[in-house]
Length: 290
Image (cartoon, rainbow, N blue to C red; front, side, top):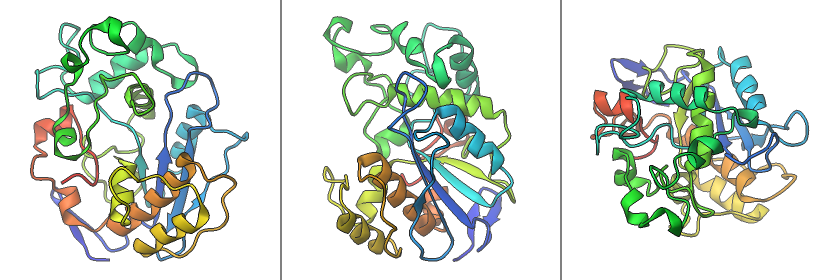
């Protein structure tokens, strides 16, 4: 691995020795079939799924798992949007108390939600038709479609669209609660500079990993063992151990962990042209969007 400049720092060849991808969920309740955690080490062995403590993950158990590994040389990718658009309108939620940066937004979401297991559906429901689109009764959908800079550059989704299977709103605002409750114990890029050691969290978009593995746009889901091994091989990974299930959550996590390992040294991913200090503080960025 080659060293990569990151801000005023350089990623040493052995800076990260473990790579984890977490397919996330904003579903109501306390345990979630939609959460999957995969991890791999340096080298070429395929990522493996981490067994949930009780059959299915809770969001709080993911938080605990992260905190236990905060001193590891671990790069962790989460598949949700770490903030809401800000640059386009000068506010995350225009008309509400100001949140001048993403951390202020995380705190606001967390303090307003008493949903089970770090959920945030109530935050969205209280603002439907104002900030969030959940159906025709809320007005014209196009009026809600505001995007972060990184989304316009390569991730076509917005946290204000909260309807349909592809929506990212509920997962993202639940994720913001987790980021707030980390309380600075693990740096979150690009809101924090890359530390010289220890774990680091980045935002990921699993479709980027799929396209990097040679899968066509719009056909980025893997649901069988052979297809997963083919995609892993394209990322320099060996074949995987049999998974307990081949659903989108499990295969997305496994493939994206391998992609993080293969991509960590790409300088352009740590230095997107449009990532200014203001964007880094207010909106963040998806690792992999250039």
